[in-house]
Length: 212
Image (cartoon, rainbow, N blue to C red; front, side, top):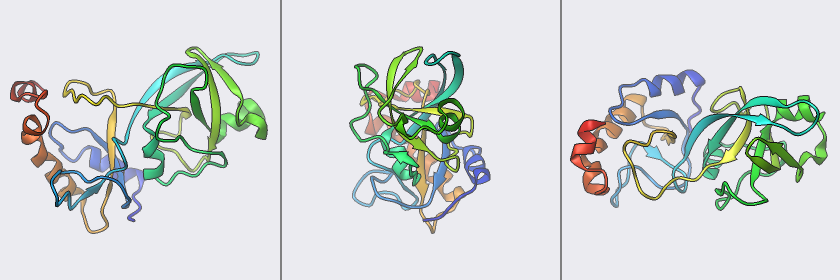
């Protein structure tokens, strides 16, 4: 698939998308297509489910010195979509979307692993305490994986509501651009979908579209 630079991500996010917040695209992979219907989209391929991300500051409270770090809430399929490969452990699985319970998994950055945990390989399976409770480390992501920001130290598995809400914009949706598509084509196709949202998802009424 086509590999895009961080500049490409930023140009797409500012490409004049109307009613759509799109942070980034990359090559081409499996999953569903945008646009619906039998023909699908000629521009985008998405992973299974919504591939999305949001940022959140949290406190790591294990050890002697609490530390405030940046966490990213990302749906499990996002990592596969972007070709992420952990240097230790594994990635999230499709069902890893719960925020409650005793075995909530997280991924951590290589930078946090080396700096705070001394590159200890036994970090996998360890319970890490944060201000939202204990979390189980299942993988370490390499420095080369700097999406959505190099400052992210902890990755949460995020869930996405089955009920679409045009006013809920706490997540940013991403997709992969097909090899023969341009950023302009992608922006045009996404803008063309906005007027039909109320037909595809009745809870998003024409009035809500106008207000957004």
